[in-house]
Image 1 (cartoon, rainbow, N blue to C red):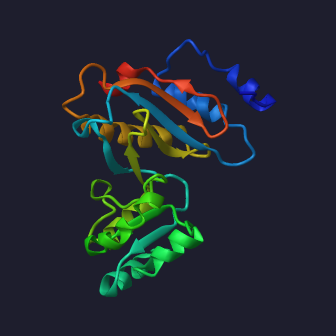
Image 2: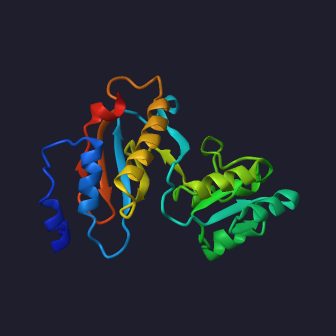
Length: 231
């Protein structure tokens, strides 16, 4: 993969053979985020899990203390009083069965998170093939299938992020923006790691986190000292 001049220059600041403490890694990632937009800072964790086994799956959510720096568009599948509650809480879109053809046939996906009341999951299930691969399917473990739609919406707006294994058993999660202070990014990172370390499946043998990298959207990755973040 060919990289641009900015990336190449930024990469020179990083020792690829070294692993860094969190504070040093955050400072480096901020320094190497040189794009013209406010880049997202992401953590990538390669785990020792085997997601093919149900008892080694990881999925959950955590509210980052300083949020993600991103305005999140929320869709709520609900009816009646719960639909009214969702609108009052600040959901961007609220609907029921009428959303199925809109998503299925019109390809409408102008939302970042979907929440559903439990009674709507029969309807939402028909959209599984579309929402599932895009990580938009409501899920009880992530707190997005719930009767308390107000709390779900408030948590998401406050900076709730979901973490889950991808097909290669890696977890990718945003922890803020390049414009955040180093302290804000460190707080967010710590909150995320506390949640993920607690979520370690007991069935995992050997190392839980095999490697960890911090990077900005357009910047090079900075390897983290795994021992320090899983202790």
